[in-house]
Image 1 (cartoon, rainbow, N blue to C red):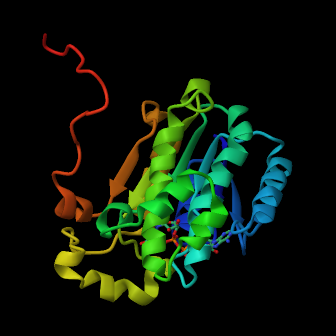
Image 2: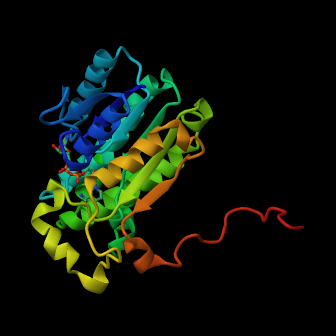
Image 3: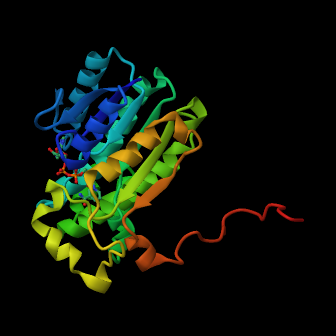
Length: 265
Ligand code: NAD
């Protein structure tokens, strides 16, 4: 049993995850702009700082798990980038000292399969995110919330992979991973669910239905648990086959950055 923080806890996936974790006997500290133990606006640096202080107070400075799940799709591309990327990264980084006090500590960020299914994402915005330049990222956020959303989620997945392998994380025994859900039936997509289900070849959904928040909650609960003890820097897609349908051969890909190691020699 542990103490687990969930941002976006009042939403579809966050709510399902808190219910799933409560079944396992965990204490959940929810963070959201509404209906949560800690009310905080993760779109601003001030809100993020206040959240970290409030969570430290609520938990006595020790947590065992974290889900960075707060996110939006629109209408403002600048806010999309600020909440989905900078809010998530500040949450994971800011709560790392609390995870360091925990047992079998594990953090999971919620990315999205839009990271690989939306075409032609702007590299400048990805670089501004990964360069930790929020002002520039907001300038480059453009006018299309969908592109900003997918780009923020791609940058978040890459940040997780870069960060998870470092001394502050797996080097200190703290696992960090991401999940990349496809279309999940939650309030986030309620207005566009039917439209997205019918995009055909542009966004195929081989399983033939949207995902359920409880299905994402199950994966999050697993990644937070000691059963996932070998996971580090993974971005786990769970999307009913959409990424596989669009990108079957794009991954796994060959290693072009290191010398060949002597397997089979
Ligand atoms: P949701 O809208 O039901 O929940 C999101 C929650 O985030 C809400 O409770 C909302 O109040 C909170 N939030 C929004 N702005 C905030 C802010 N500034 N500060 C603090 N909290 C804030 O959506 P969901 O589908 O449950 O999404 C959860 C996560 O999963 C998001 O990061 C989303 O991008 C991601 N995701 C969702 C889908 C999907 O199809 N639903 C697919 C892939 C990824």
